[in-house]
Length: 211
Figure: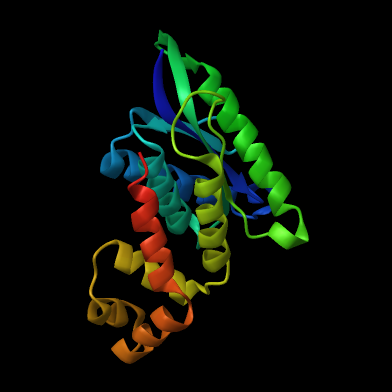
């Protein structure tokens, strides 16, 4: 068995959406984009019940990739994530079936994220990290502290500010972002300062460096 960062994601409130086909199409396109851009160890694949799963080389990469998936889906549907670190094993290649404690811990992590989301005091939580016991990997408390803070800031963004954040994560200039949104560069700068977007970007950078 090898140790990887496992991820389980679950769409939030997707069953209440009137246009389920649109939701699924957006979900499939976002998953495909992450597979192409981030090259996961185990490619992301949509499973039953509006879930997906996959695995990355490090927890940091898993955190960054899942955050970008969340941003991509934000105009259509929400998503929560459980991330773990630990051992997995391949039971069969065709169809691909994997097992191991890292998958079980990722399941426990996404259940913890859902419990937090259902409490008023932590309703902004959408991502939780729970490594396999004694598996090593990044410190659970430190990673979750950063994720809670990042999710709270993201939760407060309106649609335009999410677009600003997305553009900056893609390397766009503020001028180009302003042109896309049909607002002034000054308005983009104001959103960046007012909405804590710089803090989100810095958190994403530091979390991405986690081994």
